[in-house]
Image (cartoon, rainbow, N blue to C red; front, side, top):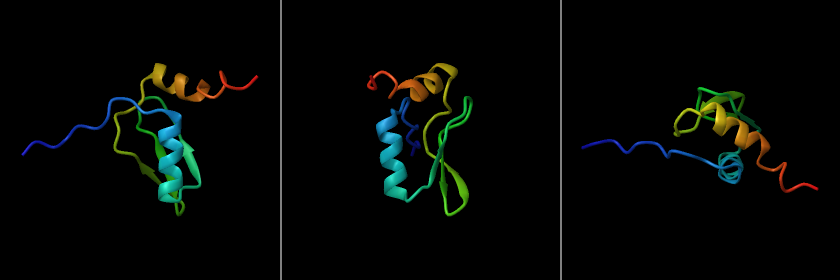
Length: 68
Protein backbone atom coordinates (compact mmCIF):
# COMPACT_ATOMS: atom_id res chain seq x y z
CA UNK A 1 0.00 0.00 0.00
CA UNK A 2 1.42 3.40 -1.01
CA UNK A 3 2.05 5.95 1.70
CA UNK A 4 0.23 9.27 1.25
CA UNK A 5 2.51 12.13 0.29
CA UNK A 6 2.64 15.23 2.48
CA UNK A 7 0.54 18.26 1.53
CA UNK A 8 2.22 20.46 -1.06
CA UNK A 9 1.66 23.83 0.63
CA UNK A 10 0.67 25.14 4.03
CA UNK A 11 -0.44 28.57 5.11
CA UNK A 12 0.31 30.49 8.27
CA UNK A 13 -3.15 29.87 9.73
CA UNK A 14 -2.68 26.08 9.38
CA UNK A 15 0.76 26.28 11.02
CA UNK A 16 -0.53 28.35 13.94
CA UNK A 17 -3.44 25.94 14.40
CA UNK A 18 -0.97 23.04 14.50
CA UNK A 19 1.00 24.91 17.18
CA UNK A 20 -2.08 25.32 19.35
CA UNK A 21 -3.31 21.76 18.75
CA UNK A 22 0.07 20.27 19.68
CA UNK A 23 0.91 22.66 22.53
CA UNK A 24 3.98 24.08 20.79
CA UNK A 25 5.79 27.14 22.10
CA UNK A 26 7.60 28.08 18.88
CA UNK A 27 7.33 27.74 15.11
CA UNK A 28 10.57 27.41 13.13
CA UNK A 29 10.57 28.19 9.40
CA UNK A 30 13.62 27.54 7.26
CA UNK A 31 14.07 27.13 3.52
CA UNK A 32 14.81 23.55 2.55
CA UNK A 33 13.19 22.05 5.68
CA UNK A 34 9.62 21.34 6.69
CA UNK A 35 8.20 23.72 9.31
CA UNK A 36 9.11 22.60 12.83
CA UNK A 37 7.35 23.02 16.16
CA UNK A 38 9.08 23.27 19.52
CA UNK A 39 7.21 20.88 21.79
CA UNK A 40 8.50 20.30 25.32
CA UNK A 41 11.88 21.69 24.28
CA UNK A 42 12.27 19.42 21.25
CA UNK A 43 12.01 20.47 17.58
CA UNK A 44 9.43 18.30 15.83
CA UNK A 45 9.14 18.57 12.02
CA UNK A 46 5.64 18.66 10.59
CA UNK A 47 4.69 16.06 7.98
CA UNK A 48 4.75 18.47 5.05
CA UNK A 49 7.20 18.98 2.21
CA UNK A 50 10.28 21.13 2.82
CA UNK A 51 9.67 24.83 2.22
CA UNK A 52 10.97 26.42 -0.95
CA UNK A 53 12.52 29.90 -0.79
CA UNK A 54 9.32 31.39 -2.24
CA UNK A 55 7.06 29.54 0.24
CA UNK A 56 9.24 30.62 3.17
CA UNK A 57 9.10 34.24 2.07
CA UNK A 58 5.32 34.07 1.56
CA UNK A 59 4.78 32.60 5.03
CA UNK A 60 6.94 35.23 6.68
CA UNK A 61 5.10 38.02 4.91
CA UNK A 62 1.58 36.59 4.93
CA UNK A 63 0.34 38.73 7.82
CA UNK A 64 2.20 41.82 6.60
CA UNK A 65 -0.48 42.48 3.98
CA UNK A 66 -3.28 42.48 6.57
CA UNK A 67 -1.66 45.04 8.87
CA UNK A 68 -2.09 48.69 8.04
